[in-house]
View 1 (cartoon, rainbow, N blue to C red):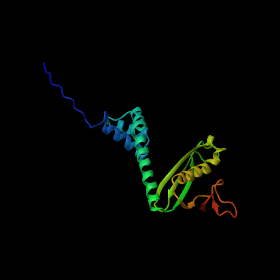
View 2: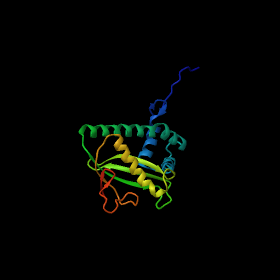
View 3: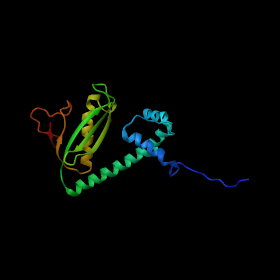
View 4: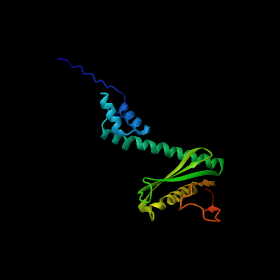
Length: 182
């Protein structure tokens, strides 16, 4: 009778999760690949991989929190650097909706520091938070400006498009206290 037992694992573990499985999920998510196509490719190549439910769990419990953590740290570093340098920023912003036209349900407004060439803020707006979906871009801009005001970041110039809710009116030179370039 043999009392010797040996366990062999084909990949290292991170906690109790196989590191290769997390890497597959991260690679699919971060590359922008479609999960169903990526898993089908692995299946056609006879490569054992993860399931759809494993991918969803990896996203929920590991990948999205990691992205949020990195983004939060990056945002704090950016805010601290700007405040220490005591400089005003030149921002560019634009909104995007999930569908073109006047029936969008979700929208996002992205702000970039044009001097540094980096994304410094993203605001998400749902159409039921505003009067109608065509007001989502203006709401996203207002939330973005509030964010910068809350973090004591001075805005030198705001560059945006001529969205109907944002564009400057005839004779108007500023949007709030910011110089508006359109």
